[in-house]
Image (cartoon, rainbow, N blue to C red; front, side, top):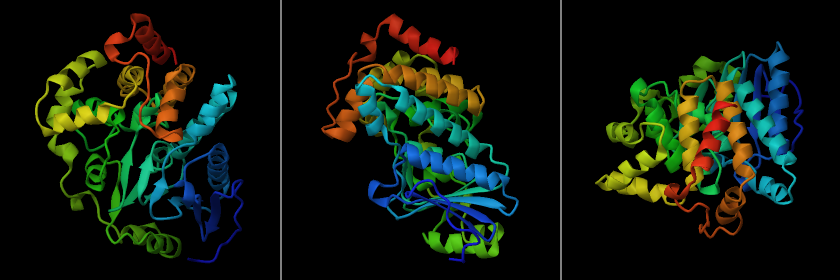
Length: 358
């Protein structure tokens, strides 16, 4: 890679920040943890964006990662759980507020932003990629939002991104967004290109070569190494869009769940399996949130995510879900209520009120 014009100034050893001949480069460098974001990393990314925004020598910003296995496997919800369990919710509140502000700063950045997403991107990983203007993937890339299983909600602004997918017919966007938010569906490279979550694909997987071309030759030359949406293969989302649209439409998860239970076919069975680990109240919350975010600005969606997240983290299902998925890893969460049908009208109303008043 080209010589640096300025030295790294990152606040975190897990985030490398460089100015390479006018390209501001932010590299997630915590490969042993699959580049999962902690608060220190979030602050470092935010600070880098602030610096690059005000630096006239920086023409564009590149976000990338160390290692081929994962771009970013999510956020550090284990540490949030630990502090929440002590009764001190402030560290978690601060982390999510700062993360969502960073997501918004990326989405509204006034210079070209390019995310090279190689490997896994989950949860918070989408927050530092899906809001970039140009989103380059490889054939190793897949993405998912798995928050339902940890008793949380779809966040980092993805409730907005999922309901504003540029290549999806407008009448299907909210239903498809809710499907992606609730099922933790593994979005393939072809799905990413078809929906517009990705704008380009690097078929040879040479992300280092892409970065070198970007730094030394410019954005047009780097994108010349990629393929576009017309190079996508078969998308399972596209093939099942009609069913998803009809099944996941509406603002009442109980009605959606009934349609899913009655549906026949291999895809419907796979959807039931994907939904099995989900916290029932998270499903209710996601339904309210996605229907709200479909008609909101990104900032409004982030604020609603923050309000709902605060609510759910103060209930026992969040620590239980994180325990089951990330601590003990037994995948045997005991959620209460155990079924959407057992949720009280007061619980449902509290969720809907939290979204509407956010």
